[in-house]
Amino acid sequence: MKEMISSKQIITLILLFVFGTSVVIGVGFDAHQDSWMSLIAAIILSVPLLLMYARTIMLFPGKGLFDIIELLFSKKTGKVLMAIMIWYFLFLGGLVLHNFFEFISITTLPKTPKILIMIIMVLVVVYLGRSNISVLGKWGIVVSITIISVVILTILFSIGNIDFSNLLPVFEHRPITILNGAIKLIVFPFAELVTILPLASFFKKGTNSYKVFMYGLILSGLLLFIVQMRNLLTIGFPLMEYSFFSSYTIARIIEVGDFLSRIEGAITINLLFAVITKTTICLIAATKGTSKLFNTNNYKNLIMPVGLILIMLSVIVYQSIFEMEEFKEKYLVIYSIPFQFAIPFIIWITAEVKKKRIKEVN
Amino acid sequence: MNLAIVLIFYTFIIIFDFIPLIKKKLKKEIWIYSTILIITFIVILLDSIGINVPSPALLFKTIIESFL
Image (tube, rainbow over all chains, first blue to last red; front, side, top):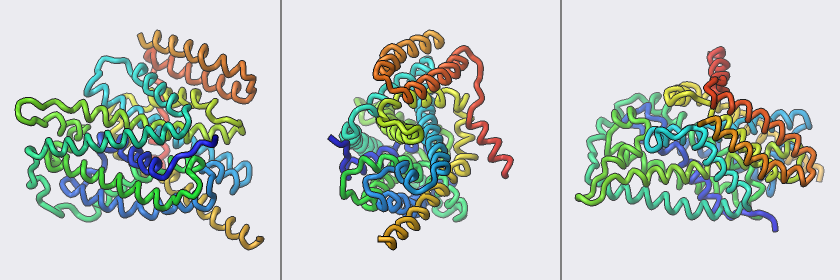
């Protein structure tokens, strides 16, 4: 039986992917109390980008990003492009794992060796990656329900802590600052959705990629917006900027009556689920690429070795959380441009031209 | 401690994942797998005994800074 995932499952995977690390780590706070505007701007500006991604895979139904690269380019160029994209997926997976490790080691497991946490995480991810892809789809649906309910619960519980004056003064920042935050938000997490493209070969026949990507963007954008508003209204921007994990901070101060408090474990579970999903998608994307690069038949044989590369990258990528913050704030945007904008753009344009030529010949 | 974890992990990987692959006689996969196995093992081992391996993020930082 051919492995397939339905549109609904893809949407939940997109939701989890975007939700992934960004919601706990927090990005795009350049505009402080106006950062919600950055988020809205980021969602709107991501639309053309995601439409470009969707168009690329709609032109070749049933084919993933790497199959498309193989079809469009000469052997050498294709292999170079493949290698570049594989690197991006691998490094992204390593970053996500490392972010998770920083979170878990600061909040819950300060003395557990780094390597142990990474190994356990990667074993789970490899297991999920080796299972039939529909398992990942079903996992997406179950986990997204859990995550959304946790978000709703934390909002309900923090109603008592909400202070609307945290939003004031509105428009204190110049539009350029707001836009700056928006660009950071596009790069991480929205444009990272390029990682979904290699999985397009698993999409069910007749899947409308535009619809899937747009629904995914709207849903995940809405969820991010709700979370950001919750954090802004409860703790306000100075604390939000200075705490590395703002969602965790707001869950810590939740107290309902005398009986319900310390529910930050729920936030950890949220992050755990989302990180597993995001890393699995990165792993499958990178493995599909590796398998195509070396012309092997079954990509599943290579999942474990690629998982080992993920462990290696996540262990060596940063030495401390400060390095992580520095890279995220200063270099991530420029680093991501070739992988998220330039190469997908080249692939899309080439795809349009070649498709037209094929039509003319016919 | 770290060293022990790495050694045990790699032993398990070789016994339960690499050897079954060798039995399948997929030549290309075996080559790719063994290369990755050796490289990752060396890097993770160095890290676990406290030798800092330069991060790829550092490389990108230098490249980006040379452009700015």
